[in-house]
Image (cartoon, rainbow, N blue to C red; front, side, top):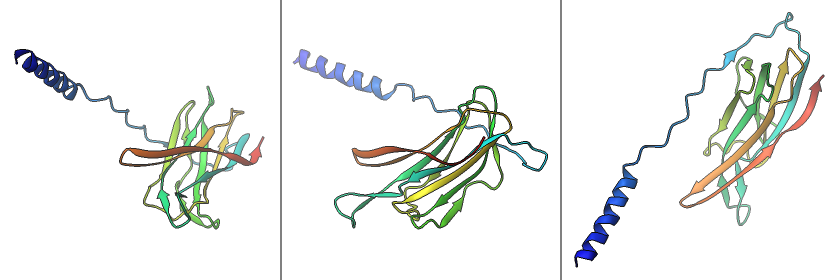
Length: 173
């Protein structure tokens, strides 16, 4: 009986130790994005207009059954030494109608920095064929940013996630 009690006591202490472990470190708060003004004095030497497919939902068994998804658009400046300027991030629905403009003014992304834009899971206004159009420019020759989106949904212990990559529609060289 003693052996049985000691075994349970050890299991309880082990469980308690696991429950009282330190919380996972939280990511640092994102720094505010620097708003910039583009006027006739700013010399632009590089830039792109980029298309990124977004799925606000996907079909499961049949067209009438869908999984709503949260979409995160990520814009990452891959340049080691210079900033880029994101001039617009616009969200369109399946029919190509503008739903939302995410930027009121252009923002600067410093070297190796990134930002993201979210379409909430309950926002199904875009439909299965939604898209972002992202425009960026630079005042120096720079490496092109990585612009992609991840869609995700979890229900209970099941989940789905996938990534879509961007397509360049137009370039300024």
